[in-house]
Length: 256
Image (cartoon, rainbow, N blue to C red):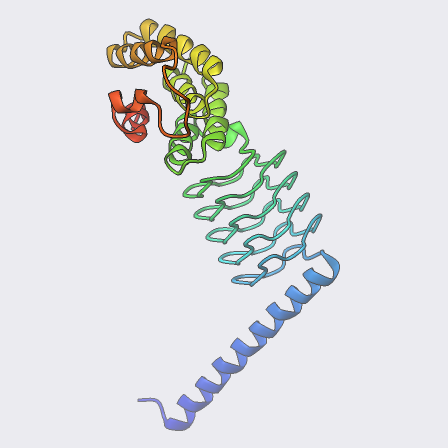
């Protein structure tokens, strides 16, 4: 058994080391906020909510578990940084450099990713739900489709259309994405756009021998060809009364 004096000494030493580590972290946080330069810094668990870090140099920094929610990291250099488990909700990452960064398990919901670089970034378990400007190379067409369905379920029809469009750009033969985009366009009363998407979906479903898709799309086309007999309202069109809920219509084309 350790002597009481040794145990107390060990405890005090541990506390002292922890305090030094915290102080070092605080100094590096201060350095970052003052100079926007903190290469290879240890910012583990740092609280940087809403911080203005536009153009900051954080290459190689350890930001594991850091909270950067709604921070401005536009144009920031995060190459090789460790952002595993970091909170990046609503962060502006437009034109940020994230090549080689570790984003495993990071929360990237509602982020802005226009022109962000993700070459060789590790993205396992990262959550991009609601993100804007997701580069095609970091997600599968099915991911874009699933995100589109989720946005449609929440009533965010324009964002759903954007995701379905990205799914189509990544996989031009994705019949379900054409159909889903057509449905979303129908929901915002863009009948012409909806009809064009429905025709393409029917053509692709036919070439793929997808009988369920053909039947559903033909029912949709029939609805689109039927003139309104009463004043258009913001309520859900009768097509969904026929086929069921929006969720059941779109979820049938998820490949998983």
